[in-house]
Image 1 (cartoon, rainbow, N blue to C red):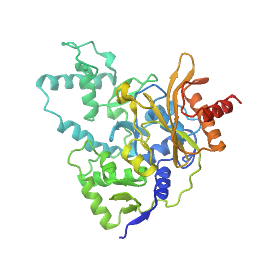
Image 2: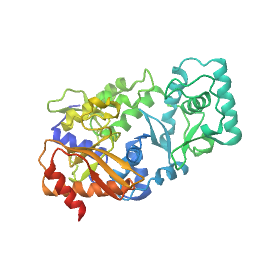
Image 3: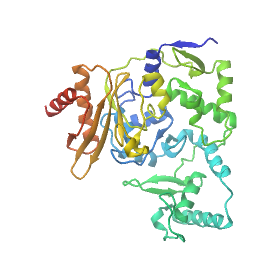
Image 4: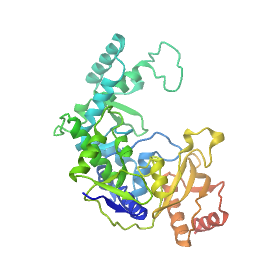
Length: 397
């Protein structure tokens, strides 16, 4: 089958439509829209960073007007979604549960063998979970024998709970304060859920279809990333087979080196609204730095992982998208006690902005302030004072 030829503009529109960013309310409103979005993307990354509202809520709020943070918990409680790993920790639709089983098997079989003491502790913790139905780390006495050697040097009970979770023996629910509650799968997974272990080929093909549905247009390395915890997975091999059979299409994009892939039923000419989105660094659109460079000419890196002296834009810089163009990055922090959103740096990209886009950005900022449970916004720095003054004037109206 002949490759599909796309301009970069066409590819960008397909990518944005797949990400749910062609227009606001693309998946509707209310808790039903949250489920539809997760079901479409197949995976929404969870992150604990609380400089602004956590990433998984941010992803939802960017796309769903009036989003409420309790909706994710409600969907977990009713068995529509669950928390586990794909490429990272996140939320997945429950009907994809069987495709989490290869990841659980990988965590269980690919780590170093457990010592007899570790095996005994895992059994004791699991027995207790079966008796008490739910457990938190605080339910255990401090069982550390040696002093901590660092942030991730967890005490044994915490390690046991996390290992049982990764192995699939326990699952995670969340309190309102976002603390983990470990529960038995039998008390969380609906009884009609398919628990059949997929074959290696089934798993690889599932990952390919799911990832292309969420990314629209993608390189092999981005598709394989979602299966990264399953060593020796067949994703790249099955990509070749599926392309030959026409189950997926190869794509040629101007000035880009392939292979690049897409689904055959991809919407080829989606309309992009031109709305302004303030996005999380962990949004599906932003997690692959090379992809942003190649398709959007946007060189982005989340700098919370960069040493402070080397940061260019700020600790937690948020990409700002208008239509199909990244127009700015905003380093922000929510002061929840004072209910003020502090913008340490609003850095505009070298693009031309008209009054309409500036006004849309101002309205998105208003919504972002409310989403972060703040009442006001303060700007500390910007590289374009004229545009900043226009935004401040619009916010004051």
